[in-house]
Each structure stands twice: as structure tokens, then as C-alpha cells.
Length: 332
Image 1 (cartoon, rainbow, N blue to C red):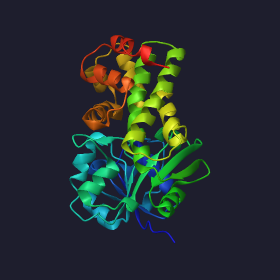
Image 2 (cartoon, rainbow, N blue to C red):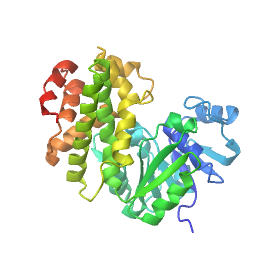
Image 3 (cartoon, one colour):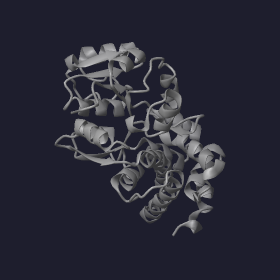
Image 4 (cartoon, rainbow, N blue to C red):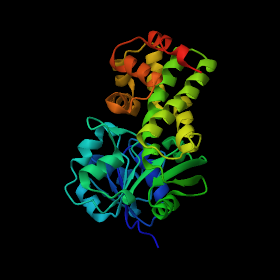
């Protein structure tokens, strides 16, 4: 018997839209919170998200939209949070109802700025949510490819195996395969880090450094991810599984990766500010770089030359070529 109850999506972007599409294949109805009432009205009128993945049509009769996050939190038992990390806190601060017993599923793939916490940690700390009710979605899965019904794989992490399996079944379908894991923190931190390394990959691509160097970059990036997650969330894990290496690969190389595209502009000579202004969507890795750098400096203390390199480019004004020249001899 399912313990997930009524499911709600929190967020109105591309990933929230893709997840809602998946959920509606297995749920009779869902709740859906979007911050802007005008976008909800357009969604209902045209039966698709007016801004993101607009080619995907929905049976809006099966969706209870609301622009009041507390109404949605009260109505649902399971909250799928898919808000970009820079906006997460402003949305979370709107929650005034008790969500401590709700199931919380983080699909954010980012860190909460200023707090330097992963989203599941923030819900536990701020709202008193129990570990067994906290889940995370990871793996190599672009929203755009979900919308196109391309074969994809997602990993659901939760300390409660039965609960992760139940939620995985809500997302599963002919073109969506699901995997379960107990490594909540490792998957969540890895999802943040792969965005940092996708920016690095984009910079290398923009500089036309070549496929050989890109391969070395990715090889060394997965080692950095392993060192960091093993230090901050020690447990037995296979870093070559899709939730870690797979997510890194798809983000580092793909044309759908906003982090790669952001880095590519910087590699081509854009300033960081100009690249951010050019981006139509948020590049999570920009914020993740600063947060992970500060976490590592404040006590984790593992060797992360690529992270340091990206931080120096984004926050210290070091030129990409000079920054990479500093670390090429560290690669193996």
C-alpha cells in the first residue's frame, strides 16, 4: 500500500514541468504550485506551460493549480520540490504550515545559497522533516529529453527503501527507467558538483582545448566528486553508477546543459556577468561553485583543483586560460 498519498509539484520551470508530465502517467491527479498566477491562467487556457517545454500538452482537468504554496502544502502528502536553487529559499520562506510529516522529494540539484546546505538537509533543519521522509531525484536526465519521450533513467534516493520504490514507481514508464538508492546526501552533493564541472567542461569547449583535454577533465572531475562525497557523507557507493558519473557526463557534454553552455560562453571570451545576462535560464553551477568551495574550505578539506579553478574564474576574475594552466599538471 502506498504511503505517498496526494502528490504536489513545487515550481514552474522546465524540470518541474517534465516531472509533472511523468507523474501524471501514474497519478490520477496532482497539485501544482506556481508562483505566478498569470502563468497558471495561461497554462489552463492553452493546456501547456507557456514558458517551459511548451510542446508538452497536459490534461489540465487532472491538475489542481495554485499560486499559494501553503494551500498546496496542506493539500498534498508528498511535495516534489523543483525550484532552481537561487530561488529556493524565497519560496521555502513562504511556507508557514506544518510540513514536518510530509514526504519531501528534492529535485533541485543545487545548494541553498547562504546556508550552504543541500535541500534535504535544509528541510530537516528548518521544518523538522524526518530522514525517512526525505528523498532526492538524481541521474542523467535532461528535462528536454523527457519531454521528447527519449529513454531516460532516474535514481530515487531515500533512507526508507519502500518509500523510494513507491516514488520510483510513480515516475516509471516505457521511456523512464528508475533505480533506487539509500545514498541521499551523496546523490544530492554529486548533483551539485556535476554542475560545477559542466561549467568547466563548457569553458574548455569554448576555448577549443580539444576532446583529449575534455576527457582528462571529466576523468579528474569524477575523482573530485568521489573525494568530496566520501568525505562529507561516508558510505559504500559506486561512483561509476548513473546517479554520479552518468549525471556528470550528460551535463558536461550535452547541448541541453545550461551549465555547459554558460561555461562555453566564458571560454569564448564573455565576461561572467555577460554570460549570466545572456542565459535564458539559471546556471545552477554558478551558485554551487561558491557554496561547495566554502564548504570545502570550512572543514571538508579535500583536494579539488578543478573546483578551485572554476571558482577562480567565476569569483576572482582569473582568465580561463590562466586558471586552467595552473592545474593541468595535476591531472592523471
